[in-house]
Amino acid sequence: MTREFDFERPIVELEKRLNDLRALSEDGQIDLSKEIKAIDDKIGIMKAEIFRTLEPWQVIQIARNIDRPSTLDYVKILFEDSFLELHGDRLFGDDPAMVTGFARIGNHLVAVIGHQKGHDTEENLYRNFGMPHPEGYRKALRIMKMAERFRKPVIVFIDTPGAFPGIGAEERGQSEAIARNLCEMSRISVPILCFVIGEGGSGGALAIGIGDKIFMLEYSIYSVITSEGCAAILWKDASRSKEAAGALRIRAQDLLEFGVIDRVLPEPIGGAHRDPAAAAATIKAAILDTLPTLLEVAPDDLLAIRYAKFRGMGRYKIERDADNVE
Image (cartoon, rainbow, N blue to C red; front, top):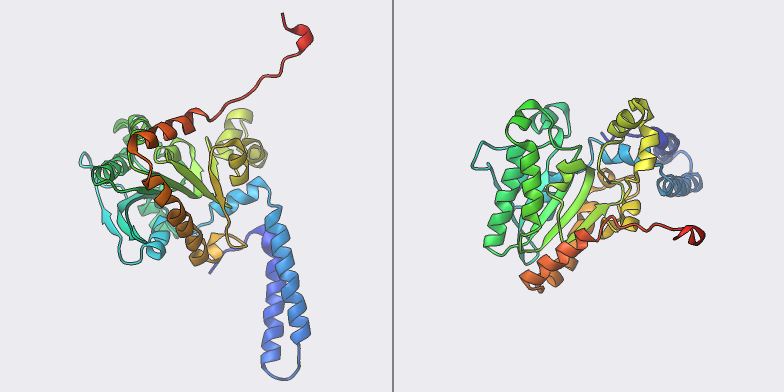
């Protein structure tokens, strides 16, 4: 059953009323077609208005929705029966929070890498809530290098609160694994497409986020820190996370304006969890539209463009008062 948010309650109430009217109408006792159409139209208008004016904290709620499609959900739709999952980092073990393998989409054989959350408590515990250990990042890098060896593009799905901060992860070199991925991804000489499908949290997201093109689903988020963590650091008060969410500029449109991402992909009204197939179709179109152009770029040129892309982020301009300039 799909979970509703507080800001959706007016819509839910109208939908219940609509269902009641439809049930009465189906009994054949009374013609309620006009009333049904009026309420149906009103629901459509309300949905469009509510989701057009979402606050940052509301977008975070959608991005974290446990029903939101995960990497494997998209894999099942996009690649049908062609996905071959590969396990292990060849150093320590396998990490269920990171999914990797190869698949076919259209005429392209691609490597697939993505964070994996769960849709219930049991699955989330198994997947560590989508927070990878070092072996997860090393597994991802192993598959990227394999893709490079066979000249196959890489498709990345980003959806994590962040890298796992536990003692075991730190003992096994969490920071080194993330840093190495950042370094090595900048030099992988095949096209890399990154899709932020839910949460893009801190270095845990960026560790598989160095791509030639970076896309965000409309109601996903991408940030250097969670709003709760930001509030705890700045104000020593995690309850001010809503305030922090606004200051962090974590929404897709904000990041597009900053030049951090390349395109915002629209979602079905209400979020990708309302219609995973439609969201997957949008992702598939972006992949098939983008890959052919990137595959025509020579490897050295591809790396140079990728380098310039990330070096160009974060630029700023200081306005000086002409009267005070010496």
